[in-house]
Length: 422
Image (cartoon, rainbow, N blue to C red):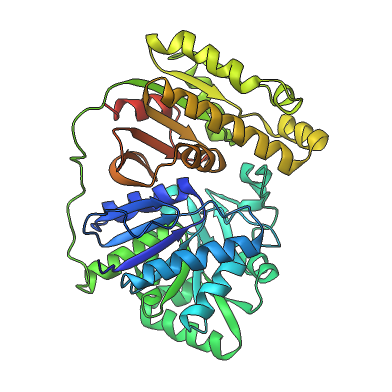
């Protein structure tokens, strides 16, 4: 296998988003869960997205896992490595975007890395280094209240500088508008000035193509799926990849029972859960009971088993910002998060044991916990449910999945997903 593009994603839903984007752009793509075993059978592809659950773990662990993934990808000929992060730059002052970018850049022998979370298709834009969600700065959007990585600063030059060993510069929109050569020249100038990373502006889809072409002149870049789109288009334009049709034939129907799990506390997911209540039974887990040591997961699974023979069910640990803050204040942020993830993973395992073969999961941390518990090694990428969210088919068993970042999808996401999982 000789890869045109190797990707390291810091969570599983983001990896699916990127795999979907690359597939739509014409790259034959597979998403793996963790660094693949050497004997894992993969088809001939242009890109591999290695999914890690490294966004919110200690920085040194995130660096070690990312380096392992980079070594696997480069050993298979990957000409460029993209460290895929969230389009809302979810991180803290301790990392992990800065530490991982520093490590991968240094290992690749590069002086500077281009960095941008912009993805205009999903209303994420960067202007003068500030990240916007729709028409408002990140720090004024509902995403400022992320339960694990609250984002209270929209200036990404400042955010990344607080995490990085090297300085951080800016490639402004005026430079991007001049084209890839101008962006490359700006990267060179910033590197001479001692900068190790450069936040790049992008407000329109065409800006991504410029940034992708400039990023390909180096071995490493960091960004969201928008930068992945730019890289894919640049690879096709340069003749390094022959565009392939999307792989819509993933095999015949699977059937079996269907269920949905929601752990995200985003406003989008909360609205999707409310809409789903009109279409399927919904059970909301009680975090206080769970954290008090009661068998809330077992009770939820028993509830599901009584109903799932009649159609899909949804179980949610999602809650609004005030409720989340109250639970975290009482039990601690990490303890609350880990307990809820473990409960959702246990429920997923029980559902699959009882015949569920179509599973929709909302929330990055929840998706990571579920996929790890199920021991799934890799996915083929199917049709798009919503922007950034494809249908996935496991490579080692007959099972459909959808892994959704909390903020993605329309109001009827859960029903839409199940429709595409025959």
